[in-house]
Image 1 (cartoon, one colour):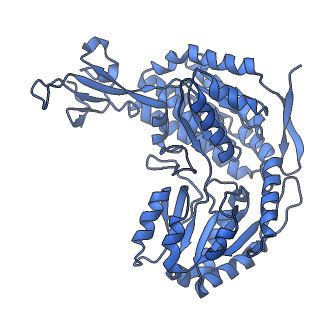
Image 2 (cartoon, one colour):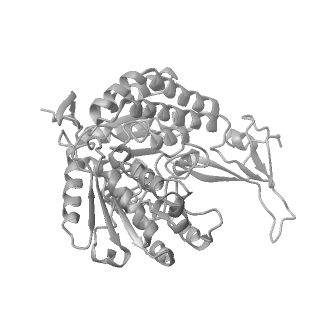
Image 3 (tube, helix red, strand yellow):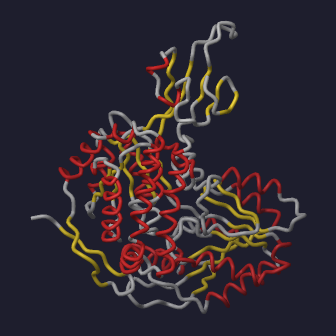
Length: 507
């Protein structure tokens, strides 16, 4: 008999939705093999057809907007406006990839024509383009039931690259995942393509991770989640006969520095804004400001006093599942008993998977006494570090890699050294702002130095597509044997670089 599991509504801890059948190893491997068998359908599609597929997927998901939002709300207890907005974020990012591939932007064709006089030796005809890697395994995140889930950024960018996708659905929102899967399959089939190009794997068995990561047909992995699982995927990928890339986004502390000048102007306002960012979504964002650095002076003290007053009245929604809530309560409870830490508590939420917002305050000199203080704690918490302003650079240099880093400073302050150090840590550096809210644009980078990310790539924005392609050069090929994007006539009419000059002209 097949094993089943059910989702739980975090607000009540009660079961919600249908019983979900857990996949066994044979089903997982069969789905991967089926995707591999039809991968040429997607890999060989021209830009217009690829774009049409992506737009069809976006349309199909948008058509289910109300149903998806309602189910996601029940399974995550996230507010309806949040999940409704997330449906549209999912749709918008898929359409953005459609626009990119329709213009051929994902192919990056570069042509260096043969040149017998080239130095130091004659140059052959060289034509480079990007080719899809193959079947991609995607692991959905718990905290974004749509935008980082079954049809989220990893899936959208992999499909845009021309790769079939097998997604491990997150067990916290399996019914939402099933609805999205059905919408995607409907769109794929409407374009005359095989439904085997896309599959979701449901289940809570930890071995599913191993089956996906070790299947020889899997050529890359996209992951958003904990460092524990991310590092396991990296280990499994390296142990394969043929290692594969793991594009893991594994969380971050996202330090926010406040200079004395910034706080002297508006300490009260900034304290509230910092807490709003830290507690947003019950602190379940990978871009949450988990460390806040303030000067050890009267400005910093004023900031902390305002935090204490403001947080005392704050109550947040439940966490996404029982495991997250238990880990949060255990870790903050342990820290609260540590000597040398000031603890600021909010209002307890006793319902479902509710927790208590908890902010810690510590002097920089005492941080070394708390090994787990500078680890990510997923939920409504942050650590405020008091440090002399002239030690801010030292604090920054002591930090590991981050997704983001932010600095609040006066317009004329000389903070260039600190800014430069923050760019060494993070993939996105923010001036006089907070890290939560990630714009889905071509210029976005959602990644950082280890251990925030496993590679120097982004999981948000158009550049995410380049994780799932690789360059191939065709040397001295006859024109009729070349991929269309490299042929002299440029039949797709896309932008190319020919002998160093960018344009769309035929050769």
